[in-house]
Image: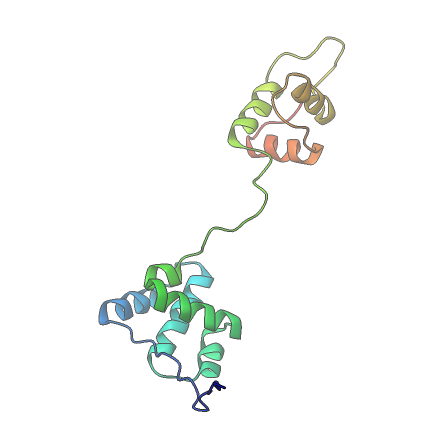
Length: 155
């Protein structure tokens, strides 16, 4: 009968060795400070990883969690600097109010009043929007925000 042997030697983690060009880019990101805070934290963590610090020291210095440490390291080793620093697209529901719908709401608020109405109200705008099949029904607050953004007001 064959037996399976397991090595009792610990698996040594692959170190992060930054090329000078990558290190210079990371130093510029950290020094400049005009990037998103998550990107700056990732840059700090990668610089700390390349200097040979322990995982705990990198997490403390970069302000990242254990999970973020291992994911960042894996993303850098697998795909390079760009993949490690940049945000990946997030899943989720797309916004209900598109720029086209915003334009329709604004143009509707600037159009003629329906017969029998003294002024445009948020509810009336929403009802007219749905009846004209311009888009789905949205909340009154959403319509208010769209109009505020367009520096317009109903009425």
